[in-house]
Every structure is written in C-alpha cells, then in structure tokens.
Length: 167
Image (tube, rainbow, N blue to C red):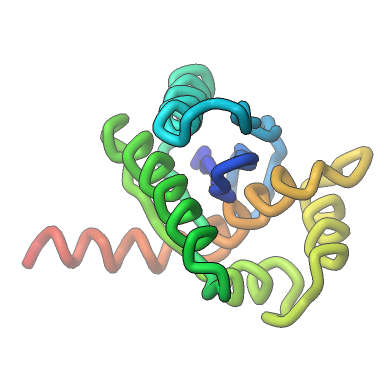
C-alpha cells in the first residue's frame, strides 16, 4: 500500500510517501511544499492544493493521511492552519482517495512509542524506521511520521471505513 502523509502548514506543507509491504516500510519520496509568503493567502492555498495534486498524480498513493490541528493560543494561526488542512484534504478527496486524520499524539505514539516525544525523537525514529541516510527536513519528517502512523494503524482504520460504508 502506498501512503501519502501530509503535515499541513500555510507557509510549509510537508509531504512524505512510503510503501507498506507486509511489515516492511519503504521510503518513496518526501519534501516541503513552500508557499510564497508575499502571495495573497488564497493563492497560497491554491499552491498547496496544486502541489499536493501533482504529488498524487506522480506517485499514485492509495491513501492519504493528514495530521489534525493542534490547539493554538493564536486564533489567527489556527485558522490559517485549518485552511491549509482543508486544501490538503480536498486534494486527497478530489483524487478519489480515502483520507484519514491523526492527532499529533497518535502520530508520536505510533512512531516513537511515546505521545509526548519531541520533534528530534520523531525525526530520529523516522530516519531509523525508513532507513534514511539522513534526517529529513522537519516538516517532511512530520509528514513521513503521519504516513508511518497510518501504516501501523491503517488496517484498523480501513476496516472501520468499510463498515461505515456498509451501514
């Protein structure tokens, strides 16, 4: 199963693609989608959507996993993050892919085994789990972690989604 993980952000949206075959995880691609901070916000959302749509077209993932919004003290930042998430979700849905969402706690627990792990621990575990030659850029590592989280829990989530379709 090919999984696209997304760490949404209005300035930088990280993406990571992995392949799960049995218990083996293989790194396919990752990177940041950087928007132009001088561009109007609506144009930045379009850049996120278009960038993710192109990644989906090139790599043909079977599923999309997106990190959920964390609580923020800055309401304006939280709203912008919500809009970026919306662009990411829409890119997956418009490509007719199942889209799953995971909290930061779920991602850290799946990757590190501890829901309060720091960024460096997540980056190191992503590197180790995917046998990367070096630590991925922060947003890309977070996106790869979201993909790994889905790989570890995706079977359960897919069965729940299939059950919901039946009902």
